[in-house]
Amino acid sequence: MSAWVLPDHIADVLPSEARHIEELRRSLLDTARSYGYELVMPPLLEHLESLLTGTGEALDLQTFKLVDQLSGRTLGLRADTTPQVARIDAHLLNRAGVTRLCYAGPVLHTRPDRPQATREPLQFGAEIYGHAGREADLEALLLALDCLKVAKVSNISVDMSDARIVRYLLSEASVQSVLPAAQLSQIHAALAAKDGSELASLTKSFPAATSNSLRALVQLYGDESVLDEAKKVLQPANILIEALSNLKWLASQLSDTSSGTKVTFDLAELSGYAYYSGARFAMYAQGAADALARGGRYDEVGAVFGRNRPAVGFSLDIKELVSAVAPRPLKAAIRAPWGESVSLRSAIKRLRDSGETVVCVLPGHESEVDEFDCDRELVEVTGQWVIQAI
Image (tube, rainbow, N blue to C red; front, side, top):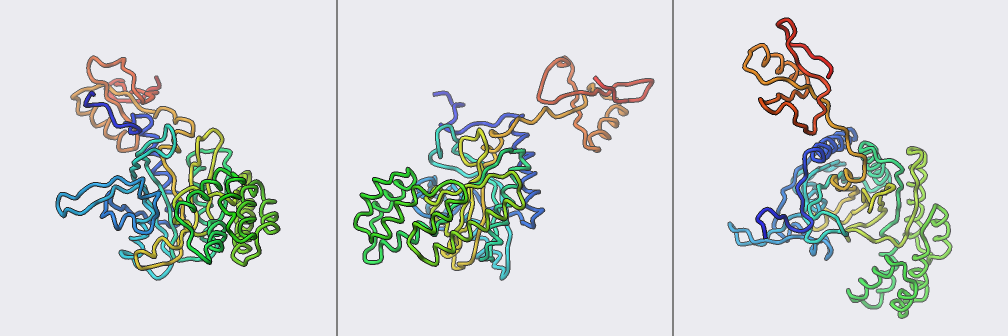
């Protein structure tokens, strides 16, 4: 095998795409800052127990492990940045009030999330700690929408659910005995596949109301009428009523502030990491292979760090986002001759200092093409360097 062949699902990013990614990264961070979010930069690797504590099996399986040559301890390469930001909030900042944090950096996955996906996403995210009310859920939703709009994503649809619904129903089923992990995994898979017959088989020993409610979930997807139907068919419980009411309020707020955004619901939706504890959402766009942004409430994510306080946020892969939108045009530039003249070099410097891109054409390379659109050129006219259209 050639030394330059990269591992499966790992790829170089070439100039035009790299420029698009970097410009988008800056735009996303500026958008988060406009909401009051502060940038943090967690390390790419940590001690494994810190990186994975409380995150669930899915994240464990996605994490590369290695041995630290200095300490002999096992390290992990992060597969998700949220647990690290929770640690920063709990131990390094330790603020009493609301904390808004954002980040942008690579994560590594042992396996791609789906066919053709990269194992090295460039993850951007924003998280708000310290507010238990639904106002924080709405802020995360609105910021995520604004980030997609900054990327020039059109025809955005938002699909919402609430982790408390399935969690509560399964907790009712395990009142008398703890459900085996294998059975829980099978139930989650049946809900994801919307397989009512498999659910009926897996929950036949459950209380009738719980079994009926779990089987009803596979039909509870669609527009806002799903929420009214859920109140009729799910077993009555205050936590379920609260979850459904919260989803309805969030949808109404999106309708008021983001006209044209389609909102749907899937109450059996469970995809993503296990730390979600409340309302959750996924954002899609026409033509995209998967959700472009995912987020929600995860109040318990900081508990393992000794500070269990409210938290809500979202994340997205900037590489995936770039692939879902139109390529950016070539960057306008000024072509200049190469020369040793002091006046030429002074003219080039003034242009670059003013924000222009000036490409000096090296001798013998006058007709080469690159990713810059040189629509102007620097020429000498009667002893003065002036810009002319090409």
